[in-house]
Length: 336
Image (cartoon, rainbow, N blue to C red; front, top):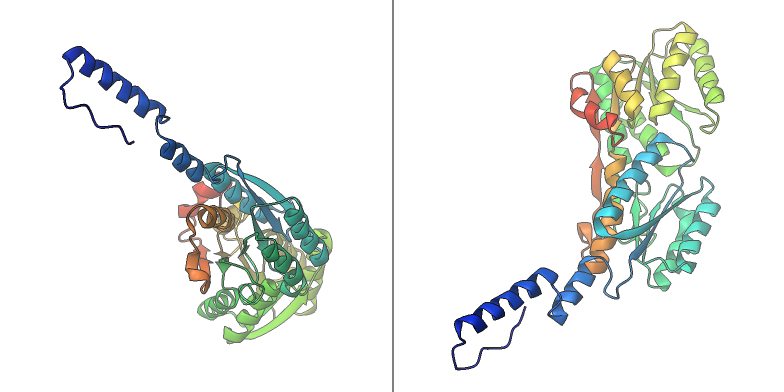
């Protein structure tokens, strides 16, 4: 705070006391200087006195535990930064793109979007950029975010994660893996199974199921296991599908093991009990948190994570029976 210089004549003790009191009150209220008010406005996320508006648009299904974790992380960042957050999702790529356009029409200050079907999102992202709205990517589309015109990206390199799972299966002496894809054409899911197949020394088969119908998905895995008893490892691409696969193994009467990508509270228990051998954690809470926080940092301080050239990786990390206790308490809180 800038204060005018005192006059040449020294103040009397009483006057000095009064001046000290005025300065103290001024500091407490942080309102005696115009520059202090400006700094506060910038820190809160908007230099004009209104809250910054961010829209998070995903391809996630409603009620999916994975996307609830993403939302929790996003809400935590929004609360910290004083951001007004809106969440919307549509599994249909055309519908998801329209949600991005809605956010532009609603004059969002920033948009965070998943790129499960990146080609379908290019036009909507271009419209946001033309309107001066920064867009960051998260969760899926690591190979397409720069070509789609996205400013930053937060997620897991799914090809690397898939190859790591293939190597892990070799360590476990598996011979025949069934990789279950619950959404055909989702670039992240396809990359996971492709990575497994590339690195795994045994045989890898793909099975496409309808991820929106858990009973049908479970029945399809059960049927495949009965059809081919040589399958000794089922690899799923989501925590809830792993739990369904555990039931499928029991129903089939075989001895296949189950491994999965992604984590939730129930999956942690399954790893602890040994029903699931391991999970690959991409930290969805962190993805949501970083995406919202990045938009706030870009708006308030011009920061760009990774310099706009490299993604910020949130995984992969293996969760096994040996280390699951380290994340169990966070999973119990609903943040892992």
